[in-house]
Amino acid sequence: MSIEVLLNDEIKKVVNIDSIEDLEFYEPILGGLSGSEVYRIKTKEGGDFVLKFVSVKSHAERELPMQTFAGDHDLAPKVIYKCHHQDLIVMPYVAPERLPDDLSRVDYLVDFLHKMHAVDISTAKNSGVVLENISPYDFLKEQLGAIKKSALLTDDILIKFDELIAAEKTAKPRKVTFSHNDINPGNVVFSENKVRAFDWTTAGLNDSFYDVASISYWFFRNKDVEKRLLEVYLGYEPSSDELKHFELMQKLAKAVPAAGLINQAVVGGVTKGDLPEEFPTLDEFLHGLGSGHIDLDSLGSIYTFGMALMQSF
Image (cartoon, rainbow, N blue to C red; front, side, top):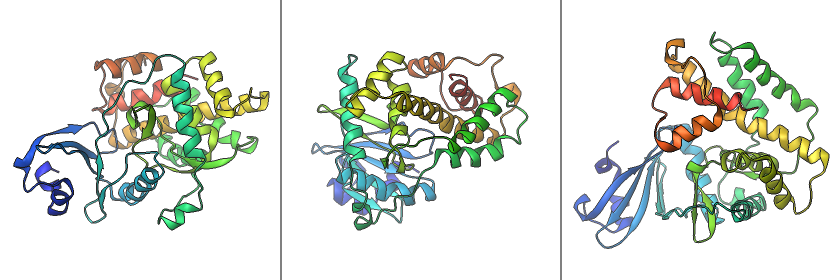
């Protein structure tokens, strides 16, 4: 959908313009794999905003109220306008800063986790938000049903999926909290010494260790730092049981997006000819993604991303 169409009369009032000619500039912002269209729009009067159109109706029904709820708790940029009819939201633009490369990165991310996991979930109802239980095990079961119809996946990967689903029977879950469930560098912004997140479509109630596990591999991928992350999050040295459960959540936090990516590619009709002869490691894939040598605009690269995640444990 073009920016001219997205800028309806109500949004023009919100950002204080009469027409698109009153913008200093507008530019698309990467919307990830969801299909959402995201624009930064800056007015000649100095207003700076993000306009997001959530193209998948079922996603919009969750994300619009969830993003508002998160913004009200200072976990996300505050929503200043939303339109359920057009599935649009407007937020102030937050200029991103680089997360520190030293161990203070752990502290900033843990501060965000503590704030999110401390949210009083009883307040959601008053905000018109339905916080569903988000089970990574159920998601894997659902995705695996479709994935197994493809002849591309090897037995060792299918066994990994099956073992994770079976692990639910013996797992000792942590406290269930309000969770984002899809924390990655593309979904967070660091500004003014704090972390805030976008894309709350998958948010809900989940094991608190799941978000910590997602952060561990997206932002660190170093065993010593990952253990420190968990220790800072807990406020004490984790027990052997807690470390074991954290390791399970790390595998789930990789397997869940992997299953979604692989299923997306399979449903889209990916073939063996679309895939590399040898799959890259997760570090190699993420490096290629960050450097621009790899993109996610083909079914082959989407499937390869899923395989890189699954082969990393």
